[in-house]
Image 1 (tube, helix red, strand yellow):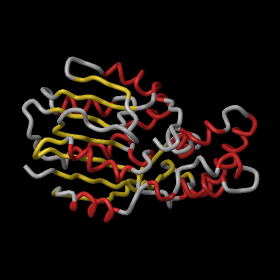
Image 2: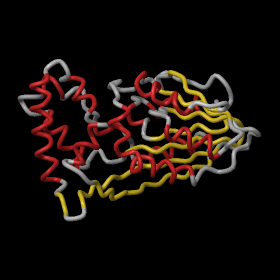
Image 3: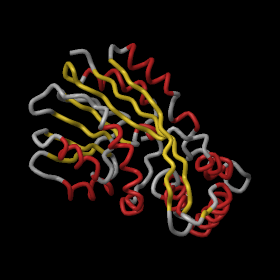
Length: 265
């Protein structure tokens, strides 16, 4: 993945319900699979909690979750079962070595540089009638990310952080995915949804981003705890202003992009 950040499964799962909801919305649009039993791969499976949903949804399927994080795979192992396993893979180089009925990815491809170029090989690994389905955050222009980039580009932080933060073009426009997948011969459905997550607790937006987008900055400053804490404090103050607390919690608008592409039977 682009920056190959270290991952903290416990931090990531602190907002597991909100993070899993788009996966369920994606899964609801996946058509019937051609295999009996089907073969499924979860690309960028993280701690395995949503990979387990696939095994529940298709009880006879053989499901493998792939990820390049040892920390995430260690947590995911707790979900393994007779038809569900996990394996190390880097999505920047991974290609199918067998035929799959479903390739699915939940909030991972934005970490994979050049993921558009991987699509043809992934589709080649699908059985006729098989499906590629994914969702990614589509909000690099939101304050959550824009403020991080702006802060990282200030004189104090530029030399240490500007090159590690996720760029604005890490996710493409919906029409780009539609055009690419349709030209590859797939029946394709692409859409976006903005969730308005109501978060609770102290600085919940900061807590959210500590599990994902802030990881590269935390890694880059890990050897200098004083600088790390200073950056986090500056960023926290910006987030407090951008996402003010209300009597019922802190609202985090979060736009996501979905794509479901089914190969011709």
